[in-house]
Length: 349
Image (cartoon, rainbow, N blue to C red):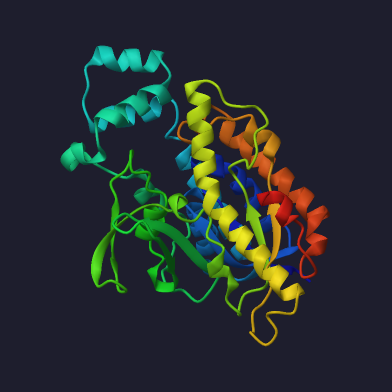
């Protein structure tokens, strides 16, 4: 009988292909049943593909549909790498041909970073487009907001005006919500969505600024206690960053891990209170935390490959994800429903 879990899918741009591999392996077999998903940025994109596929068909057919969606999504993401990205950016804001050639000879990522400091996504006028819109809408199996089939799906975005986290769920989970979760403000215009809580139209940026991924939506009583976090950003790096690129990369990793570490610290605090008998009669369930990761791979990569993966990297990351999922099924999956697979105090220090 499959073991029921929730998935927490971290964001990390093109590095989300690692989670593609994890999900592909989990969906391939029948050892694991996915009851809930919380996703941020690339994690939200992966979550949308899986949720839509599982909701489209029952049983094994739904698993195949989810894998088809994932394959489609990442085949499209792979088109926005290397010089393709340069040409896409050039089409939004025309630049001299000589500068285009120079940009292609130099690091595309360095050029893109410099470009984003001079130009805003709002400078493109009617030529602006967000490529995620077409990817989400053209998945083989569509995302239907409010569908009761498939896992419960939660998408995290950051409210630009307030800086607070916004969790989209149920009928709120539209392609626009997924786009909002992956909206890097230097590349894309803020995604505007009506918020019934404030009664106004709000603008949203990448969810990684406020929850990467958010765990608390998965605490509802109808979901199982086990949360499997698929991590993209390495928690630790032994070497002290010294070059400007290394320093900026590590700043980004720390920033996008901070919200997750805060939630894990709160979970451990709650566990300690429960162990001391101080939560008796409060009707709270105790989350059980597990992780699927490949820190060796992730620490070998820089943050810049999240934006422009080298040729073949997406496929390599998918295979690494499949391998990590296989190891999880063979090992830590035995802890599901019983205990944590993660030493939380050691993790957050």
